[in-house]
Image 1 (tube, rainbow, N blue to C red):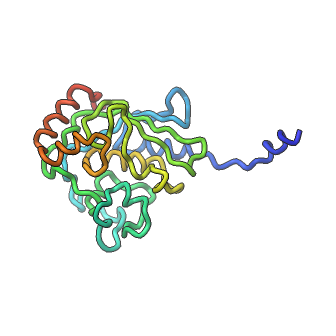
Image 2 (image 1 turned 45 degrees about the vertical axis):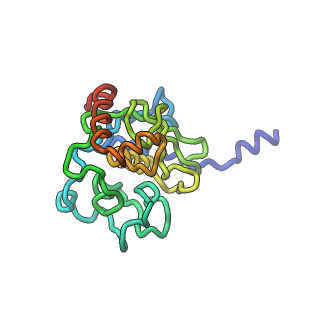
Image 3 (image 1 turned 135 degrees about the vertical axis):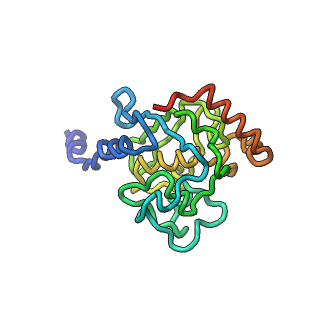
Length: 226
C-alpha cells in the first residue's frame, strides 16, 4: 500500500516529445522524422546535407538569426562544444532554432572545402535518436543507420558528438538542436573529433582522396534525397 501510494504521488516531469517532434519535422534539414515503431523515445528520420561547403551569405540567411559576443569559441572547440559550454562567447540557441547555415557563418565552424560541393550532398542519411528515460536530464544518443565515410562516425554508426556527452549536456537543449549540430558536423568533418583515425588522417594529409572516397561511399550507400 505504501509503495503504491508513493508511486501515485511521485511528481511527473512535463512530456516534451510532441512539441520537440513537431520542431524536428518542420526543420528543412531533415525529412520523415517520426517515432520508430511508435516509440516516442526512439526517433528515426533522414538528414539532408547541404550542397556546398560555404553556404549562403548573411543577407541570404536573413537578419536577427543569432549573435556572437566577441570572437568565435576558443581554439580547439568545434560547434558542438561551442554551443554547450558557457563562456565561449556564443550566446546560445535562438527560439525558433537557427537556420542551417547561420551557426557556421557566424564563425563557429569553418567548412573544410569552401566553394565546392560537399562529398555527401547527393544523399540522405538515416538517423536514429534515442532518448533516455531521464530525458532531458540525460543526453539522447544519435546513431547513423546509413553507412558514411566520415572521421566522426564509426562503422557501427556511432557518432562522436560532444554536445550529447555527459560532460557537456545541458537539459535545456532540444532535440532539433542535437540534429542541427549533427548535420553541421557531417557537413564539416573535424579530424579532431574522431572515431576513425585512419579517415581523419586521410582528411588531413590527403584531402582529395578523402573527398573521392566519401563521394563514392555516398553513391553506394546513401538513400535518395526526397
